[in-house]
Length: 170
Length: 142
Length: 219
Image (cartoon, rainbow over all chains, first blue to last red; front, side, top):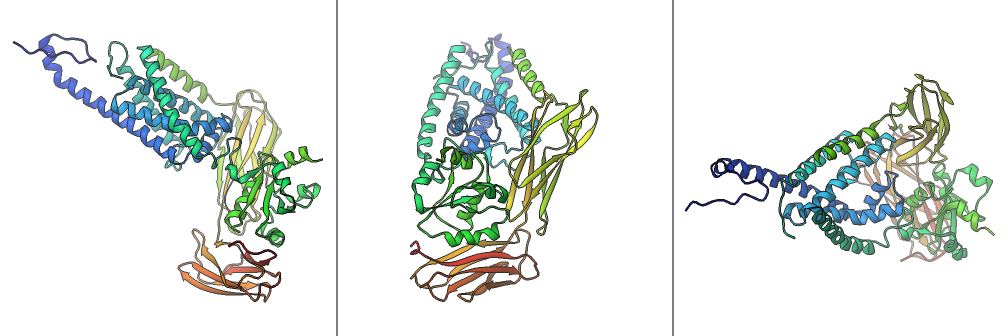
């Protein structure tokens, strides 16, 4: 009896012959996307951990954008790093994946807008995104890295859209 | 799919709240939720007044503003003439006294800078910054 | 869905990067005054790239130590100008960041914050700048550590006390590092001295204070 492989949850079923031919490509593609998950998740875990170590400095960095009152900045300084780390972990472990991906995408998008707005307003700020590890980076470097991260998150999001679904257990 | 996404996001948001709250409680003495100075280094005008003779008041504003008006008994110590003014302040200081520094208002940075230098360079203990500065003192002046 | 995400992201980016009519060459200036300078001056140049004149409503500095002046009150279209910010250094040390908040009637850019960062060179770092004894405390020597600031070198140090009530002894403890032992003659009465500290080959003078205070010292 021929063994038939069940198509992976992220693929539409194909004729058996074609499926066997495309298998190496699918495996390679899956590995690549897994690596992206781990890298992006790892970046957010690292960024969150750096900020957890010095929440007072992170509160100052948020305050420097002059968008939110100081009290909210302090609240976010205590909360956001943990949220980043949990979402990063969600990407790596593939648990609560959709939730983690959407939160991180929203966070990076909002942060990018705030950074560009601050620059346009002429504020000279340290990013705060990687704690004071990134304080000597210039604006173009920050912008390029954040756009790259946002691009990767959007690409991961596209993968999990209906028709291209990634199943995961909670 | 949308409900799954929302549910997962809410779970993650709730999970992050636990250590976040724990850290906020742990750091409660190191950060003021009202203004960007550690809570232990700021005092209200009322608190400073209650210290009476045990407090030395420092006016960190420029000379002209001090000359116009200042807290009665306050000494001028600003960064324009730090070297010249510091000895007169140190002559009035003794270890059991509390030093309270003020400048124009909550937004003014001079009092924090003077307080920082007194703590770091002169290594004085018990140096505080007045919340609201001179403006706050004027409101409470009888 | 993908198109929507892309369109929303792009429109947000476009909206916030739209430039204002009053265009600033730089909104943050870093200055490195010389040790002997009394002031640091920053020039913030602008140009009106719009089609209507722009009027300055206010130019406000973050502290009394910085004065800011606009060359003109109204800037016609196409014209250039600058705001000059003069920061009085006084006895300040380290990196000083002062801001100038400019408000105009340009609806696309009502408020601009200009930042002046002055890195004040510190030839000597003295720690602490104040040593004291309580009345009746044993008149043992206390130490002040002095070392050369970043980018400076100090081969020798001259220390003098303003009164003979305090004796000082200088000893080199390493490259560009010294210790000053300060000792009062007695601690039965209130005495004080200003210690003048001068690096060799430098005209700049630094100070520390020594006192016997009126209360027992903190143990």
